[in-house]
Figure 1 (tube, helix red, strand yellow):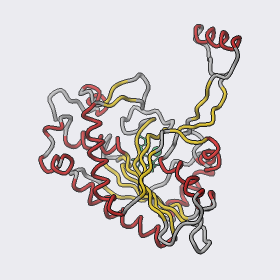
Figure 2 (cartoon, protein in one colour):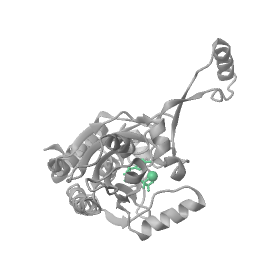
Figure 3 (tube, helix red, strand yellow):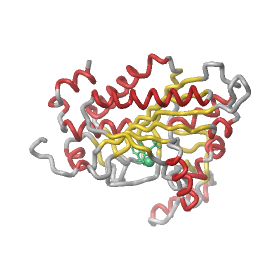
Figure 4 (cartoon, helix red, strand yellow):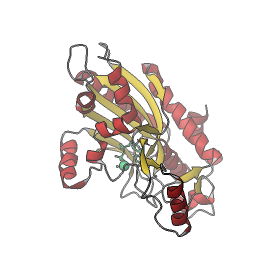
Length: 304
Ligand code: ATP
Ligand code: ZN
């Protein structure tokens, strides 16, 4: 550990300039070095997954509001969603708005929703795109995505950001094709992270579903082992952080979007998600704030 570092990870990251304060919890700028680490990890993911020949797609960090509504996100995670609103008034309304801003009053009440919302997970944008193409081929389909994602979960823990990047591989096909994909990534993900010299555990997990009904959904997800997470101690050893997740959605998105296999069955889907900032933070936590001092073996994996 460097001499000026303390036990508080966020303080250390800010002090070393890896994260840049904006005055909002969970909303940070990133240094060039931090971005380099993220880019190197991105390339490492491609080294492990690119050979499967995924179709690469990149979207801006917002999505069609209608698609978002249809996805069911608001049913499960209303508390995390971020919607984009905009001014749509006349000159009188504008004068009113400026007066409210000047008086420190709430000026947002007159804002109208736009046709876009912030992307909550990289794969949400994909399902309507695949649905529009018609039935899958016999091999199913595989996609490579990366997007900034928004979740309204402000926190002092640097690992819980409001805007962060998620890389994903998303598989569509029969239940066999999709579960094989997830099993492959459960193995690969562990081998990949072992190369980076960080301690980790794999565990069954659940999504943070909203409300009382959500508790049942969460229990059900755990009982059926639909979500696994690769957890790394970053903020604390007691509550390690999910850095990779491995999700089997069964026919949830296939039936929501009417995606079919060539036999006319509802397509199943699965995804593996990589938290880009969380993995970078894990590396800074375990190998130190100065990347030049990281162990040679780790530097070789990332910078070769
Ligand atoms: P958690 O249980 O920590 O809230 P999650 O179950 O919500 O995570 P997923 O929805 O599976 O996470 O998201 C995929 C990946 O995105 C996670 O494995 C994690 O690495 C990353 N991620 C999720 N939420 C955040 C966040 N608030 N800040 C940074 N990275 C995140
Ligand atoms: Zn989360």
